[in-house]
Figure (cartoon, rainbow, N blue to C red):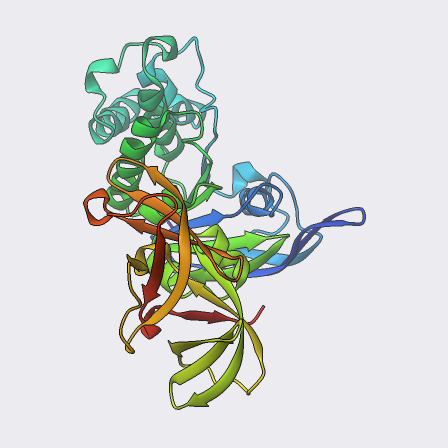
Length: 355
């Protein structure tokens, strides 16, 4: 097991730059997720770490060892693919032990390690079954066990839950995280699913157009996005165009289409600065009348109300033409489409973005 360090990695394909000057320090034993939309460079970054492709420039280290240019089989990695790539003619036990057989472990050592991993993934009863005889979730666990049978320095996973249904995917998120923590292994995980990244990761790397937009804990990135892209990509968010009017200490007054909005922020901003104001839907309350002076309040009309089980998703069309999204428990909503309402939120729930 070791940490991974990427120093100024660039990967180009002709005139197309897939990864652009990426530097990243992955801690030993950490579960780190590369998150972003299709084409953002996350899978290319994973393939660079694995050694399946080589960087145009920059260096990659596993611990103190420079592995740039070293082939995958000499990097001591474990790899889990989206399709699992289990051998159909081998049993679950034989699949798990395949790498150990190839490395000429003795039979007793192979059996001991396979039995340990079958217990870890809770599939002892499926040891003699073939891949066609087990479920997708079980196959996913077998693929992980095979990847770590010969203990790798780093476990790499490329959207391994993408083919599973929602319920099973949520269960497997917990299982994957449990296995990684019990092994104490460094893991790098690729996904475009924000909830998956939030549920599993110690840290998330949000990528966009080949660069890193932000690195941080799930809670930190959600609560304090550093760009409009990150705010929009991680969860739901409302973005309003505003201008700074005054700023005294941490209290900033903004102009939004002639209406005053107050924000509690740390950033120092000049009068007249154009900013984007981000507010999460769950931080907004709907009332029939304007809230008191301690809150921000804008008028609008309920334009949409969607029931999603434990959450009510409500859209309010403002007088300015913008639409505010609100999320609340169904019992907390007493408004129907067409009702005139106010949307209200606290100054400390504002996040100001400059790009």
